[in-house]
Image (tube, rainbow, N blue to C red; front, top):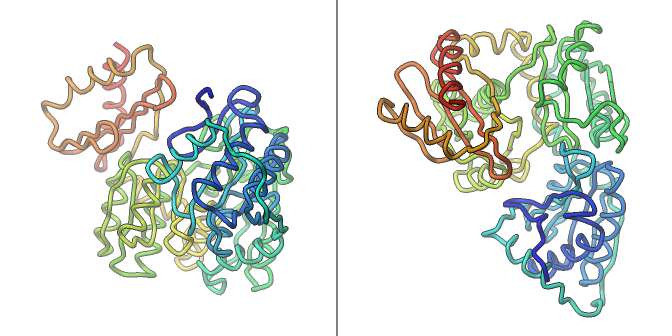
Length: 456
């Protein structure tokens, strides 16, 4: 049988009708159950037009392997994560393409306990079985159970457990769900907050799930997708703006001025929150922009642990080090007490609580950190020969670097600044981040300097 191109390092995704369809999804479902010997599997889906059909094919295949399928229906990836643990399932699958283009879909998969699944921990075996497609007749005992209502109630209780509603102060928040899966789940959390007397008001926008994405693919990481939320914050004179991606495992923040808050500063704030709650805790971070987070953790008496970029690495690091929290600048935030998985709903609740406890605006909370450790934000360069471009940068800067970090791409530190340069695994793109100690002009100068080397 031909190789399946939809298998990636940590999940499954591809173009509909080319890399992925209902038949391929069914093969993956049977392979998942066989490889993991899964007797109980949680299945959820996002709101893409193709997700219902793919989900039905997946569920039927799991039943054919004799598995009990716990069907969550429309939900976010993090709801699948939590349900996999809460229902003691042998694995979980979310049908989603998150922020990918309209003609894509995919599957996010976890093992028992919502442990990450990658090539080394079972994804490779699933790929081999799916490609062989030698499953035989259906096995007895397979069933399907709708647990959507029960699962969401359990999930909302878990998320609400991260905050003390009494610490919240009145806030008016613009919420942009991007017509993705977030709307119904957000409403359930908002109802739970109201029941606790939380003084929060919300202005919802692009709220209803709509797989045609009439307001564009929900990916607030892209600068061109931010103005809608920013303008709504200013128009409604809100205290805070939040925006989600398609399966809402990422949450993005805007202050009361409508200014976008770069992810590394949110990582720092959340590290601060958890070190207040749990002094001396371990905090995991990715290697792209690090100085702000490391400074906050050290100042609060915690231990900062760096790991490679990517959800499988962050989740495993949280488990290996019993870290209370882990964050990536790309807006993935991981929580030990949430099955060591990422959530897009927990971060905004924690930031709202922090604003309530401190009496400060989000702009005030990050102003000092931005000044102390200015950064460029991640810049992407499409290049004809990325390896050659990386080699030029290496040759120019490695001989004079004070510290060299090759955990994930090339990270070089100097007396007052550092940069991280990584090549994409899937496209001819390199990603650059530059940061400094208190010198925004130096950041701009070094960005210009490195760009000349990259593009020469």
